[in-house]
Length: 100
Image 1: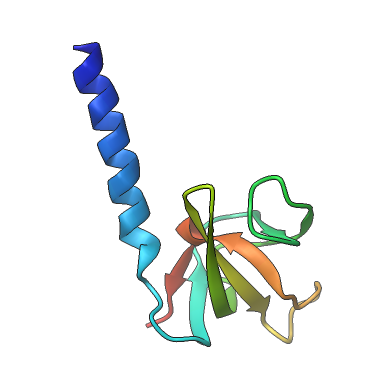
Image 2: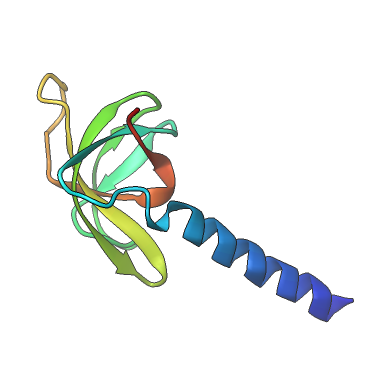
């Protein structure tokens, strides 16, 4: 039973990673933040310094991507009319959806 649970968890992580791995095929592209107070980092990776935050509904321009520690990160610029710095920043791909 424990093996089945562990296998299920691994499969869930792999499937969730694949779900956002290919959202953007060309750069630059535009996306929408899907979370509140999402950390914008100096470099890709959870240990990198947090520079600012973006919120649900904020538009970003995605200019690149990099995989770090098995997680996909997008290099983004925030909207020019944003009160905060414009970027570039790195945001986990799980929080950015393509703008339709």
